[in-house]
Length: 324
Length: 254
Image 1 (cartoon, rainbow over the protein chains, first blue to last red):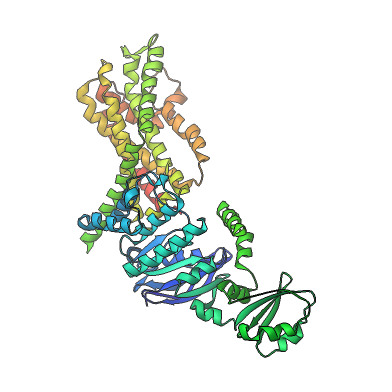
Image 2: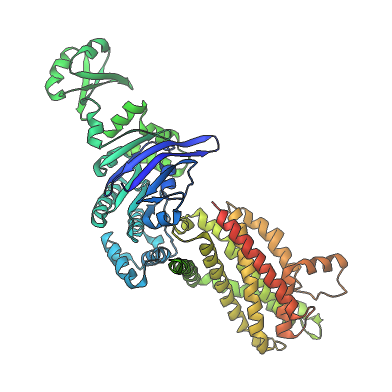
């Protein structure tokens, strides 16, 4: 077990940001903490990186206690923060040199390691340019390289694709997967892009109001929905009758649309439709993590993101989501 | 094991210093303006006032030269320290503060970085000393030492204030209510003698920078109120107190 937490808790005054989290993460996993803004993701990561002092509970990383041995923990973790933290007055190489010295990487291997990491994120050619001339995606890639430079046992990524356009986001995830594999690093990431997490994470923990409410592999979580999703637009739905059908697991109304969760939709759909009058349109799909989240919390994670927004980053995200 | 830890911290101090030095090298326009400003004081203000005033039988420009050197240290150091407010806003410091290096080492690296910046600027200003005939070039090393210690005090003070402020709005306040009073009350521009009103003389003598100006003036012009060792002790104690205060506040900074 590379990460182990026991009732990890953080209160800010009266606000209970994190309310007792128990996590066991294996070496080599890519683990996702998913949840809306303000769910406690960043605070949890902060405690694991020793930036935030837990109110109670405990956590160890690679056997080191985050409260009692913060210096050892810091050496064992790499962090990519939600907001960019590159030194824009320095070049790409210089940013990595600064980091290498701060982490005590001996000068004998420093140069080689920096070159290696720059190549891994395809920034070798731009390495002598000031990072203020880099695009958002390039900066993120350099931060990934920096986070892995000192060969951490665990790499923490807090919303690694926030504020990037969809195409760049997809590329960043590819880099994350590639690098985690090559460096054999355990990765713990937070995101509220559910679809993206599905693609990279081996296991995800869904976090809401400071608690982990569900934890499993994305596939298992989706299976737990109880089948496929069928969404029907209809004038006067007769729920009760539909609910009684043997293959239907759940029926709900969302935005005037009837959402039905059912087993083997490809086989049973004709029969289902024969029970409903005046169907205007039908959509059938396999459930996503977003559906899981809605089922667990009764809310859409994107609505939450929009509600909690205060900063410009959120408005950008909202804008992009609306556009896509 | 302990040895290893010390080496790591030293490397951390060096890393932070190295970053500051890179920034210094890159911001050439800042260096130029920081040198031009004192030169304007010396040649525009100094020659203007010097046309009708001379002090202690030497010309006014020569008289204020040590004061202007101290002024450069004052402004350069405090603003350097305050700059961390900006660093924090841009999150540049965040990545440094999560590194396995103690806060004290980061603080020391910053202080050394600031002192290096300021000392290099002072050395450039010393290159102009031949324009001031009363200045004794043999006194320069002693003056430089005192100015270096002064910059330790003032960079620490700037970092201490920078740790307390969350926004840049405090800058103007600090300029108006701290930096300028310290400058005007240091005897940089006028002699501290019996002709001064009593209240002003009292304030000047309470200002630790007065001792820096006096020590530098003593070294370069052989005009002094206090013996050099008194100036040295006051400035060194001021530096020690500010360094301590700064390191405590910096360590507590969020």
